[in-house]
Figure 1 (cartoon, one colour):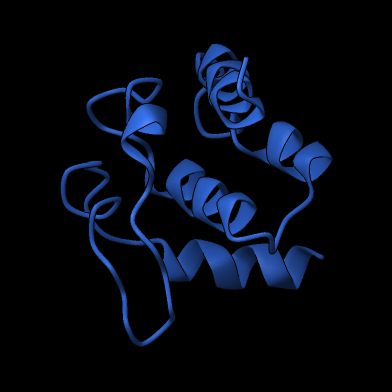
Figure 2 (cartoon, one colour):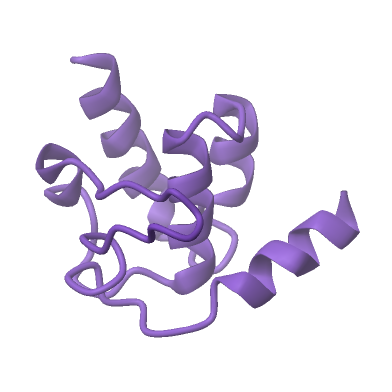
Length: 92
């Protein structure tokens, strides 16, 4: 697991702006744009590691439990962000 996280961290380098990375469609990796309703939950600058975990969770590559565990690690204030994202995705 640790090796996987280090690999994911290296791939998440770059600007944390949700306007650049979260709207971009990466054709090489098949990434999709984040839904606009989820963007309302996110801060103006999302930490790149948290962004990576969000993208992995939304694509189905990460369980909800793992998302909730790892998403807030770079910034503890992201706990409420994760709850908001979960509520939006669940349709609450």
